Image (cartoon, rainbow, N blue to C red; front, side, top):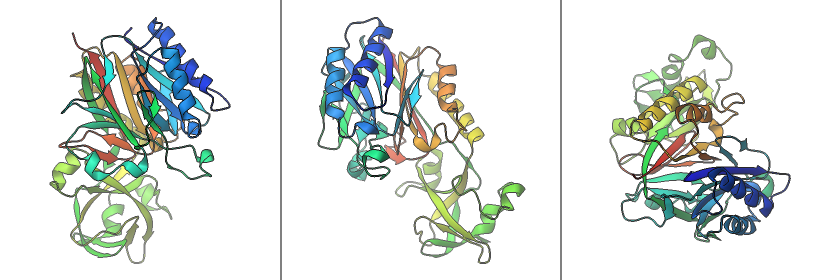
Amino acid sequence: MIAATGFAEGDHATPELATIAVRNALAGAGSEFAHSVILLLSGHFIRHAQPAISAASRAANCLQVCGCTVPGLFTEQEQSQDQPAAAALILCGSVSLRLPHAGQPRLSFAVPSHLKPDWVSDGNRRFGTVATAAAEATHGQRGAEGQVWAQGKLNDGGRVEMAFHGGSLSLGISRGVKPLTPLLEVTDSDNFEILQLGDQTALDSLLRQLDPDIRKLDELPQQRIFAALPESGIDPELAMQHGRYSLLPILRVNRDERSVTLAAPLPLHARLAWVLREPGAAEQDMRTTLENIAASATAPAFGLLFSCIGRGPYFYQGHDRDIAAMRERFPDTPLLGAYGAGEIAPTMPFSTMISYSSVIAMVSHDV
């Protein structure tokens, strides 16, 4: 095999976990060394990342080790979100990781403070995840700065990117939301509070699209209903079509005023669409995305899946249907993945940051 994955978890964030993960991958590939390694470490390694990276490099007998810390990680066989863990994808055939050439899609990892808009959307196609730390390692602060590394060393610059050489890359994005309305114009607002959308009150424009059982609830399931805001600088309809929108949470609804308060202020004439996060719709969207990828991915050698931690097993009631769909559509294909605090997505015409979504990359070796 030209690629294989390995996994290890334990009670403590020790370099041995990285060693075991790489050795398990080498055994799966039937090789004694690798020329490239993607190593993901749980956020528990925030203060112990370099020893683990060095251990992975020694186990693989190679210097090209890249990756980051993430809240959760998985392979096609195992996953972890709570314990210290390491997962590795080793490459030992014709496909390798190197610095990207101009125009090449880039595997990218970055800490939150270095996710600058002018970098993410500079015209290059990027795919990857945000590097964060475990809550217990940062005094309970979720989404705190993590670590990134490349060429076997921690990178103080806060972001790294590599490219696959000798292989063909097929990319896909699953936003996993169900549209409830078309784009609606904000015709009356007061800072964070949306009063009117088009010729309807904001609340009525939403409630009319919901199932009767949900409408009757005293509190709407705010973790499932969002305002989708198309990116500025691009035609709003095209932005929605290509997944270039952010999801803005609802803070509260006022049934007397018939208004909706969002997590950020919106000016008059801004446009939004109400969307629903629902497991069945998300699973179907993932399967459709995989079918589109399969049309261009010829016998993929391995895959990468970067999924929002808000879309993992907790969202799917304990069983990650996205991973299950990957295994069904690409059986026996090595898969390395992360549950992150944000996804770097190769949307058109340039890359962007998204959330509550999954970014898929399948790599086939060049014939």
